[in-house]
Length: 444
Ligand SMILES: *[C@@H]1O[C@H](CO)[C@@H](O)[C@H](O)[C@H]1NC(C)=O
Ligand SMILES: *[C@@H]1O[C@H](CO)[C@@H](O)[C@H](O)[C@H]1NC(C)=O
Ligand SMILES: *[C@@H]1O[C@H](CO)[C@@H](O)[C@H](O)[C@H]1NC(C)=O
Ligand SMILES: *[C@@H]1O[C@H](CO)[C@@H](O)[C@H](O)[C@H]1NC(C)=O
Ligand SMILES: *[C@@H]1O[C@H](CO)[C@@H](O)[C@H](O)[C@H]1NC(C)=O
Ligand SMILES: *[C@@H]1O[C@H](CO)[C@@H](O)[C@H](O)[C@H]1NC(C)=O
Image 1 (tube, rainbow, N blue to C red):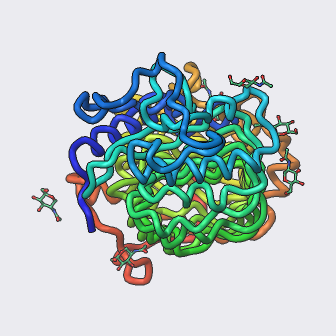
Image 2 (cartoon, rainbow, N blue to C red):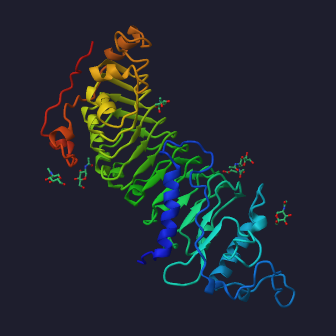
Image 3 (cartoon, rainbow, N blue to C red):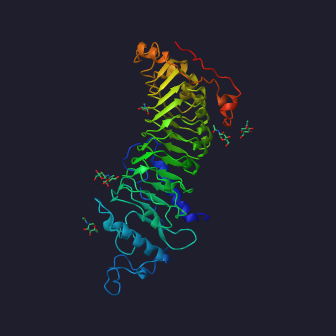
């Protein structure tokens, strides 16, 4: 494998940090301009590379003969000539271009285009191994281009590292990018893609960012995607409808955004094994069911955990009191019940918790730290079954809910209490050394 030379790395890191800094958290669920819609940094061109070029103010040298088609000699190098042909072919299948972007895709200056403003959306760099300046990054964010396919286009640039196309009207199948050794970031958000999960991305082991938000992808999400080194996996606002595979535990993912789909089944206990990396989880508005896994309490770096509007049930595990970095905890609009653990409310005092949304569940009681939070904007427990609080469910509705059988265990174990150094490892549930019981604590 090649290692990225310094120039490419700084180029890449800059693009990444822009992306990370401009988004406050993965809770950005709006289809409006992608957080990375700032144009990628254009690397400095070395003068020696370009000193033989005609200044852009002079008219292009007419090619001999009819002058209709440029020939390879008109380009700085063969890579740019090949890129020219790929762009020309793609231009021919564009179905809509309200901003006249393709009007700038003219001439032979594929890379030397700063002053003459041609080839908008294309950014050049020198790939590893060669000194030829060529297209390394494509950023079409907000261009509103329409095309029936990207096949033959993205995969036509052998040195491409990034393709960003937020808010366009591309459709068809996602091309096979396995021939692109440097490719690591794919953003197809807010387009017109449909059909099954694009399995062509599964073999791309270098892919660190995959953003498929706001399309019409449907069906299952393949379990293999969690064996890829994604740092960010944005699948929200599609029609995915599988359960989340247990392979999630193998993933080094930091941002996991599955909101507004039709995902089903329990949150896998294997999520525990992502504790070294996972920062933000957005699962809201799906059809997740089952008990809240106690293993979530191991996710020590988690800052956002949003599972609102699902069908989750059971107690909030005491282990949630170990989420010392949590800022946003949204469990609203589920069927959770029992006592709200006081150790969780305590995180608003000892930790970073600023929003604890528990409304529209069946919680029955609050500890003293929780009562304190009621006077702030932090805790929302509207529409539960808490005696003595206003805006609760009717006693009949609560009584009916608690008359039905419930199966979730109450687990009075806090991994951070047993191992205050917070390096407890995930236990296999079948070998749990501690006792838990099924009887609900403190039900009225
Ligand atoms: C698009 O831009 C090109 C180049 O600037 C210009 O020649 C052409 O007239 C424009 N087309 C439209 C429809 O504005
Ligand atoms: C895609 O095309 C539809 C229909 O022409 C249009 O309403 C929509 O705004 C377009 N979307 C984008 C992101 O350009
Ligand atoms: C979106 O894709 C559908 C096919 O899935 C196609 O019929 C439709 O024309 C596309 N819309 C646009 C605006 O490209
Ligand atoms: C976490 O990973 C370890 C080691 O790979 C494995 O033995 C364990 O079963 C995993 N835990 C869960 C909950 O998947
Ligand atoms: C807290 O989070 C909930 C759910 O995400 C949200 O609806 C609410 O507006 C937030 N409250 C505050 C005060 O930010
Ligand atoms: C936890 O980590 C600390 C330092 O990293 C180490 O000293 C300690 O032995 C570890 N504890 C366990 C139970 O692994």
